[in-house]
Length: 82
Image (cartoon, rainbow, N blue to C red; front, side, top):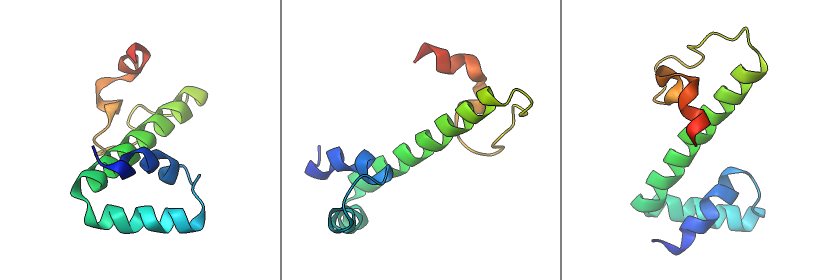
């Protein structure tokens, strides 16, 4: 596991100082493992956000994000097992 992997979620959440964020961005550009992990975290974060928005707004259709490879196609019950 890469030493930067612990900083990826903090970077995604905007919790790093500007200099540290820039360092992580440069590293992600050069490290395939961290780039892949960051993209996975971004997709997961987007899916969780969409799920939470839908739960708060019962009128939101189940196809909130058509074409997005997240768990909406499987239905919201899958999330309750996490």
